[in-house]
Image 1 (tube, rainbow over the protein chains, first blue to last red):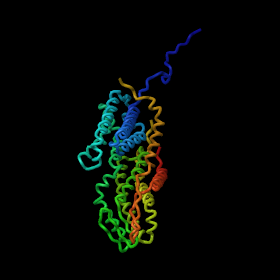
Image 2 (cartoon, each protein chain N blue to C red):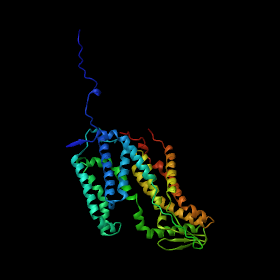
Image 3 (cartoon, each protein chain N blue to C red):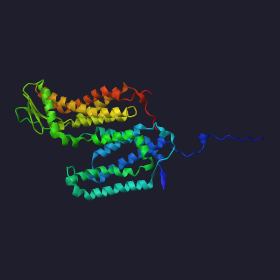
Image 4 (cartoon, chains in turn brown, blue):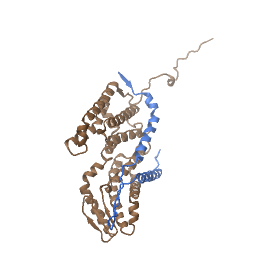
Length: 325
Length: 80
């Protein structure tokens, strides 16, 4: 009986082989893991050393992580280059040691620096620097040889994280500019309401008051539109995360800052409407519902603004989502 | 000694995605640090300090914003 030997190899797909991810997959995995480590480490830092607490680094890292996740596979030349990105034990050891040292230093200095935290003094600045230094250990996780490629691959996600870092907690900035912005806001509200209500007066103060026949409106700092900023940030963040692969990044950035300006304009109209309605027979209604109505108003401002800009900020040439890894 | 990024991490990816989505939603829906401004009725006029707003209003505003956005999104489908 003849034996038949085949020289053709078995199906290549059946051969055991080592999985070597493409450049796209490897970079995506690597960056995702680095961000997850960073987020966890920052949260641990703030838990162990309460003086380091601030939400901006957490928000920025979480935003970057979500956008990297949404980005998925990189549609770039990196996808054609098979290589491996690794995290060495040495780098991880330095990373965790650096966070441990940071926590110990922060705990040691807590009693000294706690009283000056948040003040405009050298000590206050030192505390702020310590709060931001939680990002430094992350640098050791990146291999220098691939740093340029990583920056090129994730520049948009990085920029978005930077925007979140700078603008997501604008309370302190608003606090700093309130003395002059409060006057500006009060004057605008007064000028606008005066067109509809006779007999209004303006009392100049740190918290300006618009006096009227039936209702006086005092514009306190929390009326500055800061809550509208926050709501706009949350909602625009949802839009950005869900539509990240469809957005024209430059236009989205412009639309974000223009939207913040629209919120300020909307806030002026909102307070003016309180003055107008409050002095046109609806004082009780304004007193009862101005709080909830304010949120709904800001939500409507967001929707009107988004309906006007949404088609524009979508990148029509790249509206198909990138393939997910 | 160098170790490759754990393949198991990739297997857990779906779970990680869900956890972070939940985290994102919980951040989104977390009540804001708000204080109600007291009304001062001791004067002839009513006085009103406008808004620091309660979490209920914030939650309703977020819900309205997201639902409105999703409706808008359906009108601009992706061109797969």
